[in-house]
Length: 136
Image 1 (cartoon, rainbow, N blue to C red):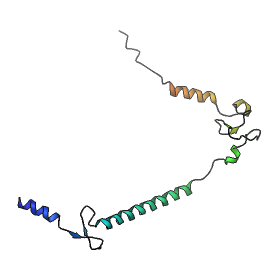
Image 2: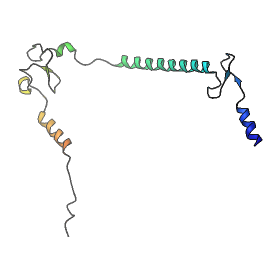
Image 3: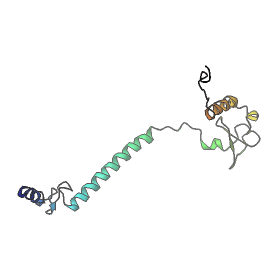
Image 4: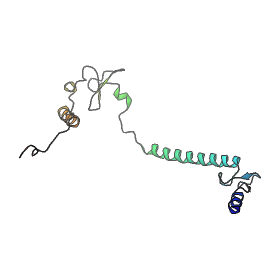
């Protein structure tokens, strides 16, 4: 029993702060006092944020803007009429006025029939069962 008390007292001996500030550090704070430990956490957090911003900056510089400019979308692709707030966007990706919004009116190259077939197949999966269940 004396050995467990001695071990307990040995763990609680105060040690000076590893930061050299003159206060006592604890094992929970990696040998640092509370003030030095807070400073240590702040410097680690800011270093981590700087690394993230550098990586994010590198990723944004790699992106290229391949989309068409917004000014082109404000006009109809066929008659060049201003679309205003409501322009219609087709599945082909172009913007059209109310006259040319239908696929037949602007000569759209999208196969709507095939797209409809694929959508129906996804919504209604085929149900197959064993045909030999009811036979003798």
